[in-house]
Length: 157
Image (cartoon, rainbow, N blue to C red; front, side, top):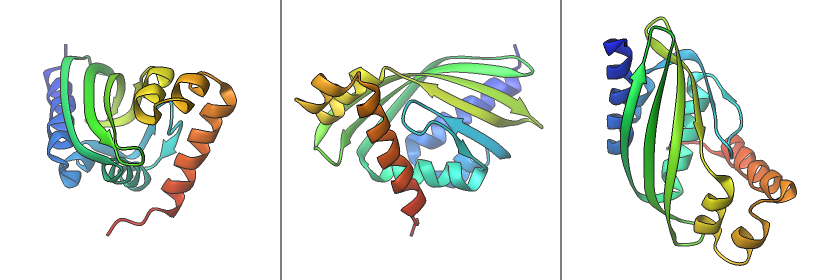
């Protein structure tokens, strides 16, 4: 167990809970990469932080909780729950997420979140879209393409 890396993961999630972007950014290596079922690969600290600003902007009232943080000298894991209202539909979402981390130079250099895309789409998008299409590759591609376009166009204030 590497207590320093456990503290780093905890600091990241504490900052996420406060929407403290500067504190979140300070946990990331300049060459960080992020991936999840929607934003598959986002490279570089500036772009990853833009993604977090975008995500928190389309989620109303994000409340997050984390647990089961573990880390060694090279990698770590955590489980976190994101509770929010998906602004595009006004639907309540409770997303259970498993996170994996890699460390370099005492910072997070790789952050990967994994969650059940079909379950998320049913909560966020509702019927019929999430229920009927949430599992199809074409629907996933549509959601991913829209997210990538939003990230490319997003300019934080």
